[in-house]
Length: 466
Image (cartoon, rainbow, N blue to C red; front, side, top):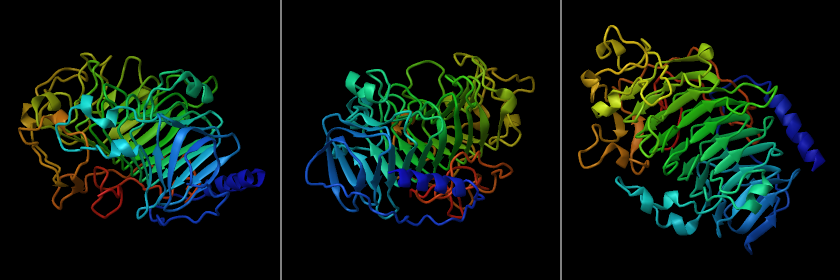
């Protein structure tokens, strides 16, 4: 194992020196098989080695990847988790699914009940029951790599014994937790479905979330990608549908003494009907910066979300070091367009400034004496600037409330020719680049800022889930 760790270190060294290349191949990497894992019986306890292509594995009780060990999933692995069990990662977990052979970590009995048609009752939806504990990484975990991997139905609250494995309190109900300030967490071209609280909590670490899809995240609250003090990295080309609160949040809360400041660049993401299951007043719905966090937010497309881009003033984000613009908001109702720039009421001090590069043009609906955080009348922009998706009805039909859209279903969020989002993006910035570019031990492709607004680019780049 010492040789393996040395090899990983060498990969980090050289991968970190590469320049960003948005034309890198997404081909499936070839990894030497180490200690093949048998699928003959349910897995329990300590686990390491390789899960083999095409095999279905059952997890029958909690499994632990011990410190210094690695569990690798080849393409086409299917894991069925039973008995509210969890995957507790003190070592490394690397899931190498591919476009043709994605990996699944799911609960088969709940997957059989999946219903993504509009107007599902969250209280009866299997997405929100927490069918298994989730993937919990200890502070000793050097890497969590998820490529072309489905993570479904997680978020059952931890028991006391489960929490002790990763230094968490009982009742914690994340789907994925990462908490190593020097470790890396990559989630690219993957899917997360369902969840109870924060589906993904990053207490600190180096991250890259690239070209992934998130649906039905959180039942009564929780932010889908919730980064805390000391997290640095990038979130780009992700699709969020029906998220309880924010799709992406950056906060510096809990920054370790002497640790790095939370710094997240967020670009070319698409948010659909987010924010409606949050039961607390005035919470966000797509992107949120707060509590000393810094970063960027460009080229993001928000459609029928409860609130617009939220820069919080109390407790304040690092507003001197946040850049944003070229963001696009569409709303079917007055309630939505009246929060394109969130008001102060219930928002702990709205700080989001209108930008001349935003769509719609703020001069068409904000009064001349507008001050950030003021209420205003957005009537002139109701149902204006339809982004023209391939297959998604706008305005939403009258028999479907905005909160009734919770999943991708059969919709296609690529942009039609003639979309007003095409050619309106901004490319004059760079990723944070906190993780290496590598087909196994990093991000396979760092897709650079796109000329079109949103997660799907007219040149075929960006999110590949369609």
